[in-house]
Length: 132
Image (cartoon, rainbow, N blue to C red):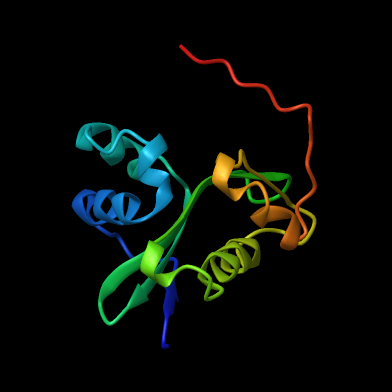
């Protein structure tokens, strides 16, 4: 399968919401609020997308300083495209845009807790979340 990875694409809010709904990430994101998604995309400073035949099939959305830390806030792959290495490649493409010593940090979705250790991520029990 020929997947194209891009850091210069600007998928529409509708395309991104549809992708999240086709992945398990839609369960934990405000897919019913396009105005929130618009801001999520607008204020992310590193977005890598995966495309197959003109369709958005994956996204890695990060907030980063590019040198010390990158918060990988969203990693979503269309369910019908999962288990083909797309998520792993999205992370590699993200890392390629960062300084070599830059850390990638994320909060795992419950269903993905077994996935990230396979990619070399280490569990860190010191993460904290302050919800409004």
